[in-house]
Amino acid sequence: MSSENFKTLSSAHEAFVAFLSEQKRAHATILAYSKDIEQLVSFLKDSGKTETQSVDKTDLENFLKKLGSEGYTPKSLSRKINSIKTFYRFLKINNAIDANPASEISHPKYDIKPPRVLTKMEYRALRDACRTDTRTYAIVELFLQTGIRIGELANLKVSDMKDKELQISAQEGHPARSVPLNKAAQTALDHWLEIRPQTENEAFFVTKTGRALLVRNIRTTIDRYFKIAGIEGAKVNDLRHTFIAHHLASGTPLTTISKLVGHKRLSTTEKYLNIVKEKMVENVKLEEL
Image (cartoon, rainbow, N blue to C red):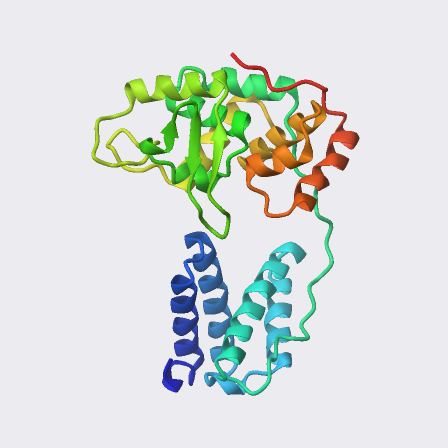
């Protein structure tokens, strides 16, 4: 890249976003990093700093203090710091700065809440709440019966369903994998395909007008049914957590679960063992319909 791409903070920001896109980072990741750095650049500009080389550690600390005074939680600040550190590592690698002002910025300490695992009564209530909504019911069953990620579900194509299994394409650094479908998931998906709008769009889940169902649409819909079912404090990702925890409780080997859900490291799956013990999840598999 030309040195002009890094001379000012604004141009460095643009170069950084372009780099993330070239690396095929997830759209949500690119958007989040871009907004975080845009916020930083705006703060620095108000402080009279516009040149990339002019920023020091104190400037970054002042930015984080300002965010803290505005009510940002330690967890949110930590995410901002991740963005800042990634941005300045990019600048250092490209020799846009002599010293990295973010290298010694520390993350604030905060308690990480364990994943929410739905009880048998809760996931039954969720199923009942959306049973007459064929598309949402299929989505819920797919989450509960396979532990698929929301991004993976949103990117599914009709051609990905083959002979009682789904082909999950490689994305966001996760390798491709095959996920078996049990009777409950297969039946729910078949019912959806029977009424799926006729469209040239290859997306598995589409809107009434034939457009691909986006991640934000899925989150909004599932959140609405959580409320209808009277389930508090749950998010879409908790359906994935529920799949993992219940199958661990039923005795499914760690290696099998890790492979099914696409964990890069077995240690990620192992973390759920404590959740299973603490929450005393029933020693049964999710019921098939």
